[in-house]
Structure formats: structure tokens, C-alpha cells
Length: 342
Image (cartoon, rainbow, N blue to C red; front, side):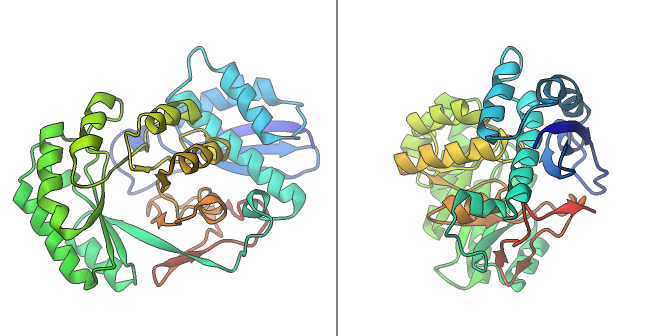
């Protein structure tokens, strides 16, 4: 199976955030082969990511045989290393890598999850959690059967009133109505160490599972302090790239929970390596937006404690993606990642 064409486009995403997540938004990558199979992947980087896919990556891969996706991933990373060890180039590589894994599954006639674990039961359902942005979202998520809720608290600003966040967590715990239910907090990298520690102390009595990305992703000194002092476990890694970036987070034990985004971090090849390193170190992995079709096979096949985050409501260009039902989600049984373009 040889690569005959690689192309990419940025689909419309009405309702997406009015910031870099749209300006440099998700891109769809299609890799076509001489066997007439087409692999579909999703990466990032908007127009800049498309340019990387359709120039340097396309030139590198055209005519190549798809034997081992991991070998092609290594070559893409080496080919872009002078300017792309993090950020846009890796986001573009992610989309190509996922399209190649999609092809591998289609060529074998199996879901990608079976490529990762031949004994996996595709009929199993996985627990999910819903990320909510206000009380209305939270009420809807609880009514839909979710027993895990992540409170996105960006709206409270970079100097939040600690008591307001603590009250939000208390109300959520009361609504969930079970001590076994899980609550997390996402600060969207807006705080400093002092603020993060104050909030952690205020919400700790409500058994919060993690405080996500409280400071900027590259402030590793701050994460070292937080990991040593916070009363709530620290999560992060959504904006980290490639196995090398995650290796430092793991070696320094800067996060209790790692949250790679498979569409940005380097694709499935990178996510597999993150799981391997994290499992060896006894650190949990909980991928960003895990209910979306690309991370789900890895969560099902590789995760000893699976939990999948709800999908982006505004990313609708894929058809046949698994849906959450009563707070749980089931893998597709279709070959590859099981999705088509809507």
C-alpha cells in the first residue's frame, strides 16, 4: 500500500471559540493510497498546519509504502525537527499520523483498537465525563447520566474569588448526589501558584479529583511547586508535544494526571508512547476530549483506568462517531477509526 496523495482542509466550525482554537483550528487530513483506500485524520494549526501537511510532509511521504506507521512518524518528526519540535508542525504531523493509522486499520479490516489490543471487546462501554462551562451545562450533564463533571472556571478570571469557586464545587457535589461521583476543575492556565494553592485548599474538602492546567504549560518550575504543595492532584499536558515533551513531565513528576490531545500532541503514535511511559511511572493518562473518535481506541485498549472527556460540540465534520449514552460510550466496530467525512 503506497501513498499517492495527501491533502488537508479546515472545515467550518460554527460556534467554536473566537480565538486561536478557530484561527488555528482543527484540520482534516486525507491520505490516499494506490489501493484506493483513504485514511482520514484530524490535526491542528489551521492554514499554517495545512501548509505543513501539503508541502514538507507531502513531499516526504508521497510514494512511500505504509508498512509501520511508527517509522513514518519518526521520519516526519526528524524532517521537521529544525523548526517543529512543538506547536504547529506537530499539530500537522498529528493529522497525518492519524490518517495513516486509519489506513492501517482499514487495510486490516479492523478497528484501530484491535491493532492496539487484539483481545479487546468492542462491545464494552467506557465511562465518560462532561466538561461544563456554567450551571446550565452542569445540570444538563447530570440529567444525561454523567457521574463525572469537570468545571471549566475560565469565567472567574485570573484572580478569582476563591469562595465563589468553592461554592460552585459544593453545589456541583450536592447536585451529583453521590460521594462516588467525580468532580474536576479546569483553570485554563490563567492563575499563578499562590492562587492555585488557595483554590486547591478551598475545594479539597469536596474531594476534587484534579486541578487542571492552573498555570501556563511551560512554567515547569510552577508545576514543580504545585505538585509538591497542592492539596488537590495537578493535571496537565493538553498543550504539550511529542514523547520528548511528556518525558520531562513524567520524569519530574509534575502532573498526577497527563492529558495529551491526540490531534495536537503527535497523533496516536505519540499517545501510545505516552501511555507506555506513564504506566511505567505509575502516572494516570486521561486524554483531552477522549470521547472524540481518535483517542477512544487508545483509551479502551491501553488505559487501566479509562475515562473519556466529552467531545467539542462545535466540531461536526465527522460522521459515524460514537455517541455518549447515559454517561457511557462504546467503540465503533468499523475499520480504522470508523469515521467518514460529514
